[in-house]
Length: 461
Image (tube, rainbow, N blue to C red; front, side, top):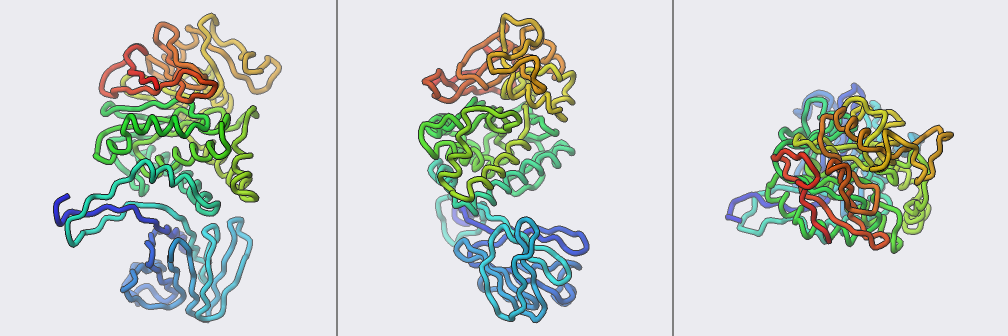
């Protein structure tokens, strides 16, 4: 790196979300050693825009201290009260936790808590790791994320993990909001053009760059690491390459060792947080839990590691998984979902705004080259008497489904095999070594039209 160029370094930060009493919302960030003054005087006295209550300053800065101060010190949040007026602290469920009236009182704040000022403005918190850009005094090597750093991010304390899950949920929601304008978002949740964008439960990929497709992971962090190392995804994205990583669902369960599911899910989540517009996380049947299934060891893993916090963390993950998109549509003719075709899909809008039946079928159905139409999936325990049903689909059903979504080839996961069916119109992809199954990942050139699965590049490992 040449002298004088910006330096990027991974830094932990605290995000402050402020909801003002008049309805305005604002986001600020604190880095270690920084603090924020909470203002209760007229904003004009501070030279600020009306209704702004937060003034950020670094360790050497100086602003008026009129109500209180929030500081971020070595990963912990502190509030110092600087007025005779009260400040209220409420828990995540909105229940009062503490009323502060003592001047100069300094207390530690739980990130799940919210500060409420006398005028009813609210300040909430979110931890994160961001890329801070600064101008160096002398030439230094540019800081980039490594796989080891990413995998280490999957090992979080309970409180930090809860906040991290909430942030990923916010990312999914913000992607949908930006998608209404045909735009995506970056890691800071700013809208961006020209990359992936999300329409309801459907992800659109542009007709440029490449996509790496990953089938079921099922608690195999070693398989996940192998794919990331072999494809050099992290390095290539950080160098500016148009590259997308599509996870096709089923991240936990069927673990070999306790903690492997937590690690696998955590790494996928970390990748989404760092490379937001380059990573797609689809939901599988082991993720959304619309229907009960076995084995389902993930909640037990969380309880084993996090004790009493395990249940709350699991419920947060469930909420996140249920919000993840169902499918990916590529402009080159490929359609991707966890399980496959669904009898309820008559047009692309049925995927964008899926019914419960569509969500079940797109995460539970299987292909069957001997079937005609849709036949009850008895192999997975479904019967005609069930209110919620999954099916096997034949070649004619697949043709109708692909026609409805405007695609030519279906790529799916959901089974521990790698194979083509229906004359190359359907590719099943598995990326876990569960039961020593054959495994691979796929690489797709988004700029080239695809008419059959034989045009998709498979990498066995």
